[in-house]
Length: 78
Image (cartoon, rainbow, N blue to C red):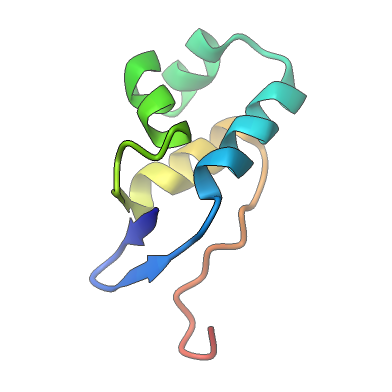
């Protein structure tokens, strides 16, 4: 999966990381998806990596809903 800014960055396994964080969170997916301003179906598409390019803004909303940081950075060093 790639996360899109004006740049793209490969983030292998990001969908699985999101899925594991969701399961660890314990709240219903309907609540988490609403907090991230997305549909449950779209959330599942992210977890399953059916979406090949994820906008950075969507990733940040998922992180905020879950209260986690997936450490996706666009720093030149990375």
